Image (cartoon, rainbow, N blue to C red; front, side, top):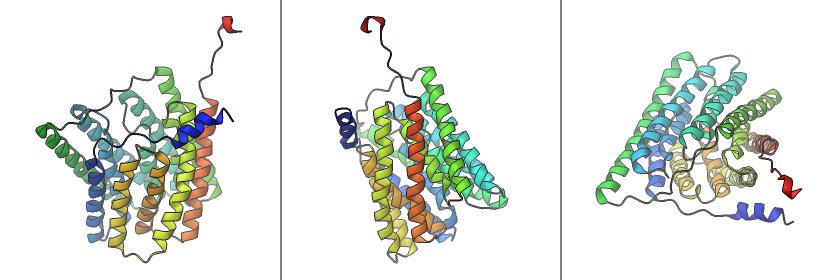
Length: 344
């Protein structure tokens, strides 16, 4: 029981509030505008591309403003690249397996980039999500440039709003204090992080694809989530948060999907969920998953409606399997304690 106490404390730990609430307003507003434009254009099948573009400006929240916009622009380019390669893979008859390979590629790129340039939030989660999701939805070659354009335009809009917000902060002299930058990880740990992220995506994606479940990318995303944390205790906590938060989020998603909401109302709810996620994600990851889960499922339903029971069941099973694979990799590659000769 004594060994479980630190883990239980980590599961219950609540982090500090966000530096500013404007980031949440901006994140929700960006997604709201993008989805409203797509709805007006009768192109909601591009909702995922817009959503991933909107993720660009959630990066750099804990980075001093002089470097923040550079990180956001860099992630806008990288996210657009993930959407582009995923969309290209989706034109193939063998898109399900290409999705696994493309997601694994971006998993390695994201892990290496995150460790090298200290992305915040850390890890390759959003890149895996973007590449695998876009690769899993059938599309035609002629629609690929459109998806790329939607993602790039949404990312540009999101980053522009972030830059304007920062400029206003600087002019007012209201620049919030940020924690000091984290020290770089040792090169060996960086290589290990990249390799194991690639491996868990290949294992989780391959396993779920071979079973024929509808959304293997949920398992791939869940597999890399624990590995973004530093210590084994934090990794286990993130994996548990992912599973429990998803389970509770499925209850909320089920309630929202049962309601006969028109598309416009659903878009507003999605934007509110995005804003709420940004308010709580730095405080408690499990609580954030309660909002992230219905957000993802509502966007999926807007683009490609599916039977409710199948959608909810697939989300939980694949999340649980992916998290288990990620935690297995974390345990197998954990740092071993060495005992000095004098202590023997």
